[in-house]
Image (cartoon, rainbow, N blue to C red; front, side, top):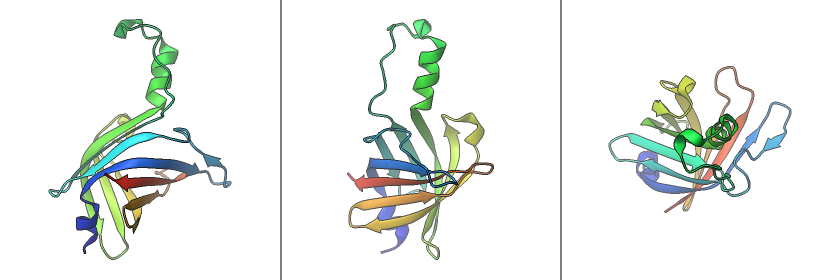
Length: 142
């Protein structure tokens, strides 16, 4: 079966681990991040990921959120959508970001190496330009 066909569908996040250039491990979103990844047959994709232990805002009013609360909420949540391209030869998928919770990443191309075993998908990402951390995101088919 072609890689594109194997990826299509919805995936639930299992883990997200980043490793810096010195080999230090970071679980930015905690031990049990929450997230969904969706690949469509038409080449569109979307992903949302958040930490499972995000604190609630002190105020229920949007204008009552403090700058520190807003910063922490932004740092514990990633979402983007766009298209994806498959490279069957090297076993990779490239996400082309059309909209992103991180404005500086809109328009970027993010290549991920794909490992697919049964219903478990691991996407390995190299550092973004200027970055020093690589990531391994593990998903399970829903």
